Image 1 (cartoon, rainbow, N blue to C red):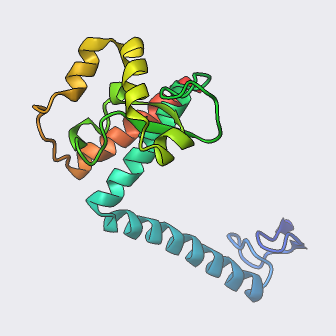
Image 2 (image 1 turned 45 degrees about the vertical axis):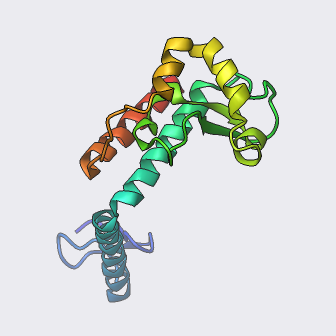
Length: 173
């Protein structure tokens, strides 16, 4: 038989059997252990995904949505103060706590600086003024209405939202 290169240690060896891919029992053991580790990593990922709660899925979807908003509004100034200060956030006009049904509404979320979003509680007065200029008074009044249908998204719907905004982000890049 022809010499082969060991799959583990990369040395040349003469195989004893036609399908032999390693040079020694030590390398065979190393190969088996590596395969077991790979299989365990895959199994662990599957288990992790199965154990995610609805809340975990919402966090993942919110992260994907926020990343899309930051990329969509890249180069624009903060909607509240009109500056480029520091870290950029995806700031909600109508908060997720008060109107969870508008959490993933693209008209409701715009680029905001960390200062306005976190330390000035959204700087909503200026946000509203600039939002009217950006999307129009009709859409702002729609966002401010209190008669939005409540939405209790299922895990499958949340996963679809995550996928949608990851794809939109890829298309922008």
